[in-house]
Image 1 (tube, rainbow, N blue to C red):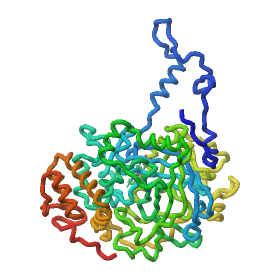
Image 2: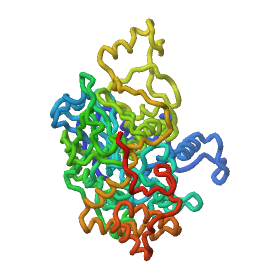
Image 3: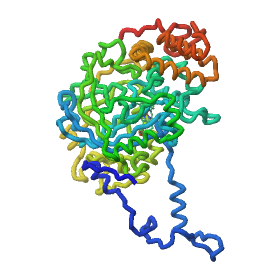
Image 4: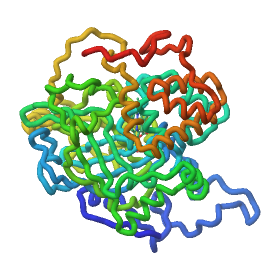
Length: 537
Ligand code: HEM
């Protein structure tokens, strides 16, 4: 079997404590009892029934019966690797995050790549968004960058996420199709959700069928904040650019590969690392002064928009290198728990309503997926930074807390950890001023759904545009509902007439001029979405 490469890092050393090597060792039960026969159960006579008292049989089968945990509700299919982030451009001016200060410093990371829609055993080559999630084990705690290989998202508000996922996942009556978007429910939802127009352009582009995880870009998608030592805030967007360049396969190739080797990306990542061809990305940030928040024609809080690099260039800050395969897929890749809420001092969130919902969702899902409140103690998840607090107990608790106090303030526990932390400058949120009416609404500054979709389509070469048109022909060709096809064509006509016509020609239909009663929450019935302009904000 392949030998994994090892580099020294604080996280590698931390994981060593849990490594088990069985080769050459005596077989034991889970209680450490030596076992002399693992081939036969205890029976009443050679040909008699098995005996209930056979604790070895019971233990082995019970453990087997409980081997599976729920797969992730999204991004179930994934592959991961260890590595490091090396800083080559200090960000002290913008953030006090410890791992972004010293040029040349290395921070251990664990990265998981994934598709979104398919289940754990689905093909790597589905047309889909790819997850690109990075856990940085920094000296001030874990920072997770839970991003994708596309810089925008389908929806603007997390309250629509369950709807989006229900639409894209296999249809509930027959669990078909397994790992593709080509079906009625997905396009039904998209056709009624114009805010998805920009993302649809990315998902129908070659980006959705990457050649390799090593040849994909990565994006944090949302606008985040950096906070410096003076408490000054800068808006940022994360970018990762692969050293090998960005490459895709053709749709025809993707389908053949799916049949021949559904593990194509997983195998490629494993073999590259195993042979010493370590995947690498240039990590960069777009830095946007707080004063420029309202300078753009779009809203920085809208996750369906990019900040064009022509307006704000990406500043390279370091490189991400993956140089070690996992020892155990389940222990590491399956049990890793990423969370947009895992940030460190010197960072903060923004009010992006999609991000705000994610801040709730990840812990909530991991509480059930990983069986209770102590999953931060699982080796792949535990920080290398020291961990001290008054949280106690719960299922599967590993930590043995000494002392009588698990409350704060106290005088009996040798001091007040809160005071110590304040003295050392722990995490502090940005003191953003808020004065607003409580409303359940979508900001008018989020209402231009088509300008950037058109910008993306027009940025593509003629060949790439043809691929987008062909992808949409394929997808809508699988759509049985004529009304759904028509609404999608109408939506496409808001992006580009040639795009819509190209798709319609392939389907042998005309692009509808207008769809009566085409309503959605943003425009209202019968509004022409093309003429709706974002209000000044
Ligand atoms: C999982 C990215 C939006 C809920 C993931 C993963 C990634 C990701 C990369 C896989 C993590 C892994 O490898 O373990 C994104 C991005 C989003 C987005 C970039 C939009 C910008 C959302 C939203 C929600 C959500 C809006 C819910 C409101 C989840 C859940 C999981 C997940 C529940 C499974 C986590 C687990 O079981 O550990 N997401 N996501 N995501 N995401 Fe998102």
